[in-house]
Length: 143
Image 1 (cartoon, one colour):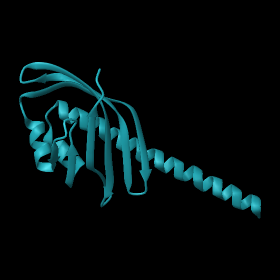
Image 2 (cartoon, rainbow, N blue to C red):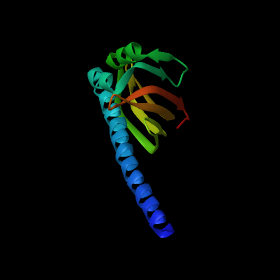
Image 3 (spheres, rainbow, N blue to C red):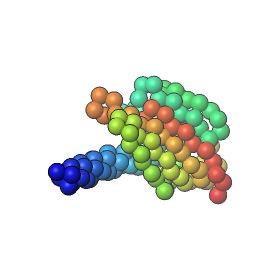
């Protein structure tokens, strides 16, 4: 009987790990889609990804709500040409996921070139069956 319980426990853990991996993959795909939406100034795509209560804390300490964040994406003076994440890790806790990683962004602001390297933490929640970001924080780490 003990061996059966151990075997059932191991199968359950394997099933949970597989389910979590699927959720992690979904969230990483959304993080990558987020980057592409920013490069393409696609605020409509980002509007679906962020919750109504979304809070964004930028690398310079500026805090934006959802409307302010979406408006910043539309700014024509901000032209990212590449935006990629690296070393991304996702931790899923039932209906909450914490994503950490690094990012690299190149582009121009008001015609002047820039390159940012930093770290980010995003908090996602499964709200009514759909993952949405509720908070994002980024910080510069230099080149």
